[in-house]
Length: 215
Image (cartoon, rainbow, N blue to C red; front, side, top):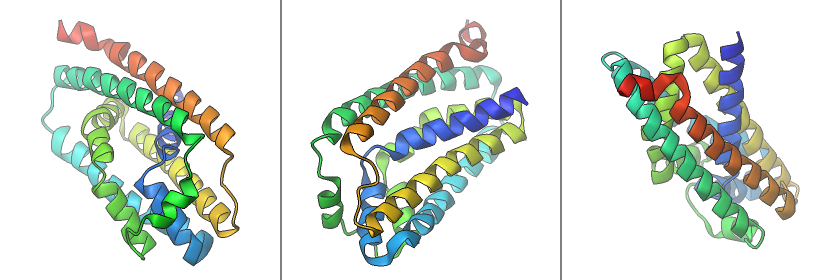
């Protein structure tokens, strides 16, 4: 039960950490919300989740069927390093977000008129997103796979709660002509998320006896 709760909390924290970084999905959600209102958020999430569940199923069905525990250990270490690097990226974005005109930048982005299609495009064609799932994301899913299917489901649910909640908040705030979060608080949250990501990356490298399995 504790492992399931940990997986749920981990999924949520990683989800909100990635979502808060200004990027294509945030800009697309804001841009479309100006025309279609708060309903944009759930539909962008739908497109995003279709891509995400496809990747997760490929990881579980394609890799876990023949991968060895020692290989998972190697992937976990690589994944931990990637998490530390992503944490640094989040910290860097925290410094720039206080001076960034997010709403202005979003108005210039024209990805797709359909929010579902926008969610698919900003996920599948985002190299950072793909890199994450090929490295750290795969390592996390495979570690949860060792615990059990329930842990994977808990991680995905936590991750999607963060994604959906964030996207609905953004679209609702934008449709009312308000910023979804103040620049000052946005910066603080990003600093917290970046620090968490780096700490978790270090923990992930040394957890599950990864180093002892390799030696």
